[in-house]
Length: 287
Ligand SMILES: NC(=O)c1ccc[n+]([C@@H]2O[C@H](COP(=O)([O-])OP(=O)(O)OC[C@H]3O[C@@H](n4cnc5c(N)ncnc54)[C@H](O)[C@@H]3O)[C@@H](O)[C@H]2O)c1
View 1 (cartoon, protein in one colour):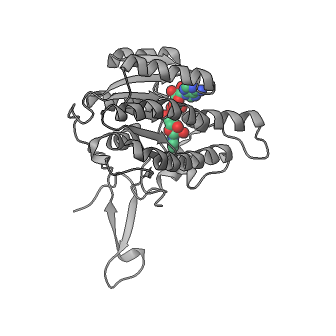
View 2 (cartoon, rainbow, N blue to C red; view 1 turned 90 degrees about the vertical axis):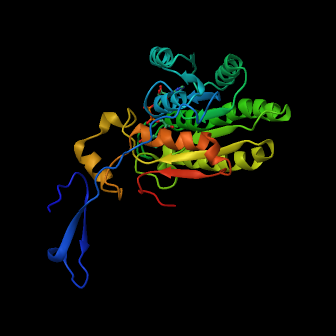
View 3 (cartoon, rainbow, N blue to C red; view 1 turned 120 degrees about the horizontal axis):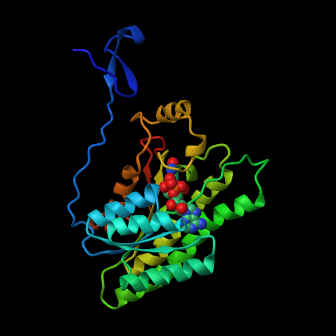
């Protein structure tokens, strides 16, 4: 029976033979099967999601809502975030995460809307590519302000509230930070981005150490190449093929691949998981 390849081909030498002439083609397919939402895994949890207007953040918001959470969506893109909030029948707050004071206010407002907070997803991030020799201080600083400093601000506000909730007898909380495989490897033109994502991984580890005693689990996610607006302006079919070939699964990620990891980390299933940097890179990174 012949196999029609849908994706990447791996040639496996047959036992006792060498060379490609004696190999078989294995269709790795594109297995993206998922379980339907149960509506229960985050039943009643109060969740704040940053960068929720589109891409990975929007998918996390949709996934959390489908599992029974009450999300508040934060983003700088007012029209888009309000539109998604309307669809999900939840609230949204417009914020520029580069503004530390404004960020603290937006998080406090979100907590007031929800009447507390059980889950914080620090998802928003930016990537403005430039080689090191051309990179401006403004680009470097903005990348760190949004990708890392905003996490410190949101974590501080939310951490205090979660700590007090636990002291009052409520269950512990979850904080999920969006890092990147760039934080473990990095690519040319992304020095600031890679450094910021390494900082996210380090910040996550220390947050987990400090917050464990309050019953707060802190983890981060390291997505690979996800098909979103980020990087879309310079994306070519050749680039997609080259990056797909880096994954043993032979494809790039969809936002839903990352959202399901966020769901796991937010759910009771991850109760003994903290301080981790979870790869969702299709095997592009394995450490
Ligand atoms: N797309 C990828 O390949 C990829 C890979 C690894 C990690 N990530 C990370 O995943 C996260 C989400 O990325 P994405 O691919 O969905 O990107 P995206 O550009 O599609 O979405 C980012 C969201 O963040 C919002 N945002 C940007 N700057 C903001 C600011 N100053 N204040 C408030 N909101 C702001 C945007 O409006 C947008 O809604 C980011 O942290 C990114 O670094 C993405």
